[in-house]
Length: 96
Image: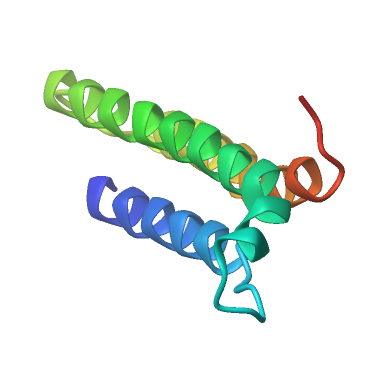
């Protein structure tokens, strides 16, 4: 379960970084419009990293995994899988 969760979280982070987009010019001025997108990515990355770290600490304390734990883990991963969507939405709409 821990390895599966690690894989899902790695995919979530990969999707988030793919949402960043590359400017079409080679100047620093071309990066300015991406600042809100970048900051939303950083915030989301820290959030996902915090959940990943806490998940590992929790799994070290678990002695037995049953169906309830598996469903609770899937519930957590479902909500975390929405983070790339929220990150893209925040970055494109200049939430701040």
